[in-house]
Image (cartoon, rainbow, N blue to C red; front, side, top):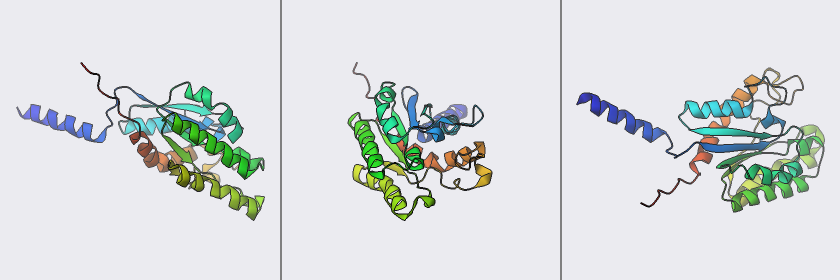
Length: 214
């Protein structure tokens, strides 16, 4: 009898902390080399480390790597339909760093991100918008325009927002590769630790499947 009570208690506790989806969720990370894992040893990429962190907390989630090195926001928009064809349950959106590095128009970046967000929302796919910050040597006007895009879009569209993907990692030589811009495995680990609460909020927005009528 006592064993049965203990087993029931354990099951109830597990249910309380674990999301109850009928099948593994598919979380697609749409982004640049920061998502793809350019220059990183296999198995240390953002998507791999994020999936491991989620599964360690009993989330049955597969994180799909849809990062392409060098992609601008226009490139991401161009391949959005291809990414949606995989039917993700939720999306992490990480674009804009290459627009900034190429000095592309902040207005075009905003236009492209707005289009991506609009399409995801119309497809009823929850998303987490990851912000980026411009390098300060691009001049105060560019920096001001660029940095304002992400919080503005998040406020106007109501999507979940993570203000700066490289928070705690940018400009730290110990956490970046030799180029000083892309995180090394330790840097990716730091990103995952910081963004994990926001990703869990994102997964909480995934609709629960309706029970089938008998």
